[in-house]
Amino acid sequence: MELDRKSLPLLVVDDEIENLQSFRLNFKRTFSLHTAQSAEEGLKILSEVNIAIIITDQRMPGMEGIEFLEQARKLRTDCLGILVTAYGDVDVLVDAINRGRVYRYFHKPWKKNELEAAIRQAQEHYYLRIENRRLMEELRSANDYLRTEIQENYNFEEIVGADGGLKEVITHLKQVSPTTATVMLQGESGTGKELFARAIHHMSPRARKPLIKVNCAALAESVLESELFGHEKGAFTGAHRMRPGRFELAEGGTLFLDEIGEMTPGTQVKLLRVLQEREFERVGGIQTIKADVRVIAATNRDLEQAMRENQFREDLYYRLNVFPIRLPPLRERRDDVIDLAEHFLYKCSRRIGKTITSLQQGAIDRLLEYPWPGNVRELENVIERGIILCNSNSLAASDMLFRSHSVSKPISAKIENGKEAGLPETLEQIEREKIESAMRAAGGNKAVAAKALGINRSTLYYRLKRMGMFEFLK
Image 1: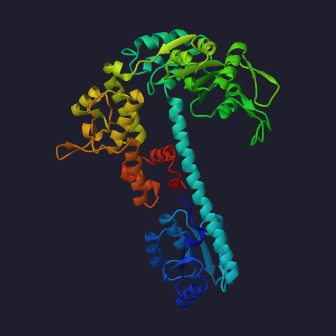
Image 2: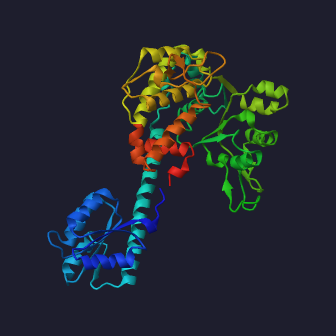
């Protein structure tokens, strides 16, 4: 959350009432000011208010200023202390500064402009410290995510369904992975095409080189061309420097072209040339660049129908379709549904920070009767949302939310008065509303919101970023 430097709370502790009145007179309108006449009273305020800066007298009855600041740091780790003294305890003060117990010190009588400048410097220091901690949390969350990615096992034997509905697919993938052949993965959305592309790459001789991914449906034609082939400085408005494309980044490795059926005819021509001649030029460039890249393409479209409708080039189709593999939809893999559900139960519970170890029989029955129009991706989403809503160590049918689908009677997550409760337009909306409500109730404090949601802080940060809820990431 963005901190307002002007409103950062300031605590002044002095046993002489005249000194406190002087502070109030000089700084009441400038800072968010709290005052205490003893160290004990100051510690009580610290336990209730998130104080940023402390100004304290050194010589006070009961507890001296340096000792008070040490106690204060136990309550407010990030607070900074400014010591004001009428005595020449130079050695003690220097030692306290060197040990980090005191940020600055002033001799009495202090000058308003000098002390105010020191307070503002301390506030800036405090702000930078908090901002640094926020950035460290972001990096830690990103590292957790990358560590999970790195630790993923892409061995075919570890893929759920390798001995079931995917047995034939795995056999074909094992045969093609050691080669350099272009692979075309065909299947409905959510069948795991990217997972299998990763597995092919990691089981190939190119595994030590990069696997670069491009979603052809997510980019406009001009942008996609630049993404694939790169561009030279000045090639178009906004091209302020040379930028290598995905083919260059994937040199010696694998390029995964997802949603290849959405590529425009103009870009299809340029891709065809790379596949035929293994070379290309950057946008706006004249230098020919060699490309040693294996291509794995994926689509959920019927490309043969697209060819008949002149929406996809026939010559490009045959260049890409060297080794076609069809990934079956989940409705054709009924025997794998529960194995997949249990796999996601373990995976998502660990990531979210909950201990949910089993599926209740009612949950199993609903998972088996649902048609899974969104395939494996939808199954994972249903399990993950169920874990968020679950309040026990066993996932029940009432914890799971399914979307309506024309193939089957809509399955409602909650039953009210014997009737199915209506669902929002999207299940993502439920999750968004739940997280937004928790964040607002916690005043933007991610640690408090995560605890209320029953998930760990890094998981909450990941979800806020994934949903684009950037107002809560400040």
